[in-house]
Image 1 (cartoon, rainbow, N blue to C red):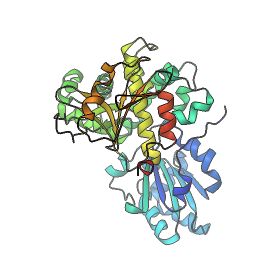
Image 2: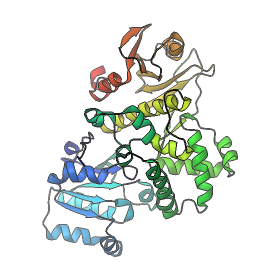
Image 3: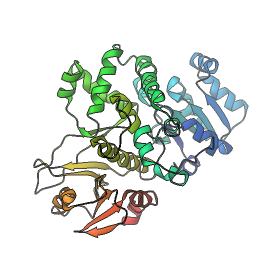
Image 4: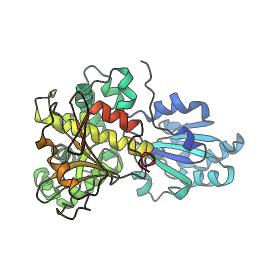
Length: 391
């Protein structure tokens, strides 16, 4: 199978900084390093190698002794699955200081590192999140929107002809490896039930009490388990935009899973089509996934929020407090679809208003750019909405 080039720009960052690269399982972190960064890496440690892991757990200084033996200086060292041996972080810190080594550290989350009290390097390293495929990586390889919404964009799932069994297995492996392995939830059936209920809240305002009632667990447990999802990068919380004055804003966050295919698997939905309500929901989630990946890859200081007034006007996304984005899967935009953007325009806060849709041709109407989704994503990935291009 031909390797598909990923767009995350780590090469230039690694020239001067250690990078902690975290992302959900099977998103392609190891393949990315092997295919796109291997020529610049002087030494590799894969902590999935049980023999190596056991030796380093017994004596974390072994890695420093090997690097000193090889006389590596001002070089890049790659450590995969760093969360399996948090004690290595002190050794890594020492080698950054003494030998100018830059490390590329990858893992499924920083949760175990933080929980162990591990040294997270402070300003000596930069955190980056790795995402499933994005449109920019696939558009020259026959990108298929229906496939993306149904399969999801985890590489092995998107490329599979029949991914449903793989999606179900992915959820099962997460429960056993990430949750049981970390001792977060001793009651796996209850956590599984919670995940299914949480999938119904995808794209919605978070109501911990309602989810606790439906999951038959305490509200405190629900809040803790949502945090587990965030820490393991399996879900994101989109905070509210609350700067409006004329219309009071709701201040509750919205919740999204990191992948559409995972949501479909958790809900046990058959193949969805444009006529179903889920299509619009998954289409909105897909655009959110693109925005999150673009921010994490190219604009790490940018923000992503949503706006909803107490009078129920809503705009799906506010990018960096400046660009208001409404997402509609329709192929015929009407004034009804523009209500949220028009209400926000009255506040005179944002500088640009965009409605992303399935129409074939772009136009400007009522102060709003109505853009076909492919054109919007081309502009996003080309940097049209970056801070630099707004200044």
